[in-house]
Length: 256
Picture 1 (tube, rainbow, N blue to C red):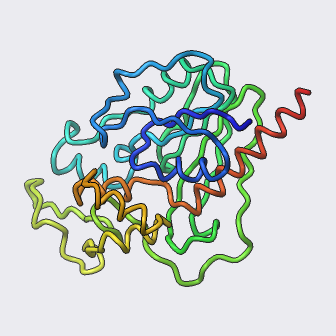
Picture 2 (tube, rainbow, N blue to C red; picture 1 turned 60 degrees about the horizontal axis):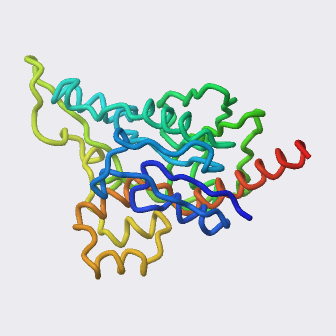
């Protein structure tokens, strides 16, 4: 029997999809995309074998400095990593996995030893250049060894973002500290608009999955772009789910 897994900050479920393909049974927790709030959520203790998820990364991305310069500290997304840590502590699983950008702090949960590994989606067979850090927490300090391919695509796609993709905005300020223009003046700093289908393809999302969401009206186009842009690429998710399977299997063998 595969592990029962609680997914926090699931979005549209791209990381969940990879873990389900690997045989895990995934239960999705609350998400703002669905009208839920993790801050009002408390899981039952001892019911879940594992917890997965990626707290919002906006506060820890380079773009956060631009937001601070334009809108002040109140304009920056809140840090929800403490909420992730709280839920893990309450759920008391055997293991947990947190995904985030490299600049984000590693999770710290009493009773768990955390080991982190940084991986690029290109190393997992995807064309999109997207780097993320996966922090794996266990009671015995098992390592998460993500297998990557020997050869990476020489020609690659830029990272998908919730707005479109490509390069980030660049804030240009005048002598009084006010922003000039909307996107800076360098051509290579401009965000190039990308179609929803192109974003989904770069993330490895099956076309029929997006088509079903559109057909039933579950999301607006903006919400779909947010969900896809914030998700873990499927190629990367599959490699991580396989690594978790190996790690928990080795821990079980050692304990036997």
